[in-house]
Amino acid sequence: DVRIRVRNLTKRYRTPRGDVLALNNVSMTVNAGEKLVLLGPSGCGKTTLLRCVAGLEQPDEGEIEINGTVVFSSDRGILVPPEKRGVSMVFQSYALWPHMTVFDNVAFPLTNARVPKSDIRDRVRAALAMVGCAAFENRFPGQLSGGQQQRIALARAIVSNSGVILFDEPLSNVDAKVREQLRIELVSMQKKLGFSALYVTHDQTEATAVAHRIAVMNTGSVAQIGSPYEIYERPDSRYVADFVGATNEFPGTVVGRKDGLLLVDTVIGRLASRDAVDVDAGQPVVVLIRPENLHVTAEEEGLNVMGATLESTMFLGLFTEYVALVGDKRVILRSMRQELVREGGAIGIGVHPEHVRVFR
Ligand code: ADP
Ligand code: MG
View 1 (cartoon, rainbow, N blue to C red):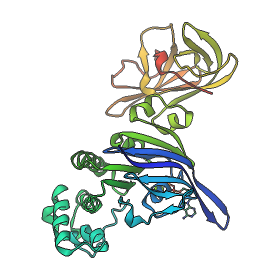
View 2: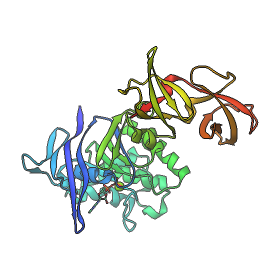
View 3: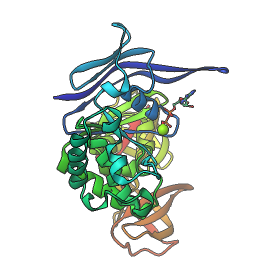
View 4: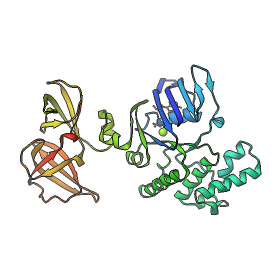
């Protein structure tokens, strides 16, 4: 059951200094009840994609379908205006009007659509009750906390009953602690209300926390779509691996295959990987290892074990970060355990072949 389908979407902005290719042949779907997160650095086209779905920008090529209806098609010359698309949008700043009461803010999409007054009252009150803000209808946004304002913005988005909500970095204007609370709140609201969402963020932690699936974007294209787990554990490019989570990167040269393992000589020694990447002996590659997949071991040699010197230890609460030197190369490890090694002491570090990722 598909709520949003985007097919081969391309969008160029025409500027005095030439065209900007903001979206390059982008395809994706959002299923019923799903939160699909668009994740990528600033300028990669996230907002453009959202605005194209909402109908606030006109794409150059491709097709967009919402709730089974084609709302844009370059081939068939279809362009449905925003108010007829059945989607609502929640912006970065919540975009509540400060001079309007909570009631009037939430009522706005309905007033705009000329819904009869008595219907408006019932629907606004129902929406406010759903987000637990029934008591605030006569207040002004400035008299509410950030969390309450977010709920009001959400109530305004659900009041039209579209079932599809577009979020453009809705938490980016609040500080880290509040953001974490709002994230939890948003996830539980979505579970309760069951809407489908296309959710934009540049923050990897937020994406992982909120998403059913993540689409990682790179300069107008989709680099990879998958569950947060797949994106994190099985990135299929260096770009995705780098963007999502911390990594150690070591250049190396392929040695060959042995016992189902790919052997690579790297700047920190010979490493075995389970990757099925298509490479030949002698080929230059880059090996990526996540800090939490490296462990301190009592062994001194063996498969993927390297002798190192502990350079520094940093206790970071949830985990401790260790910087080790293999020869003159820095290797970062993260462990939930407190390792009993002094700075300057010798340690063995190891990694399972499962966690050695090889990229061309
Ligand atoms: P994001 O939301 O991921 O930060 P945007 O979709 O806002 O990215 O922008 C994608 C690209 O399109 C960027 O290079 C940006 O500079 C450009 N862009 C966005 N809006 C316009 C516009 N109205 N006119 C010209 N270029 C634009
Ligand atoms: Mg943006």
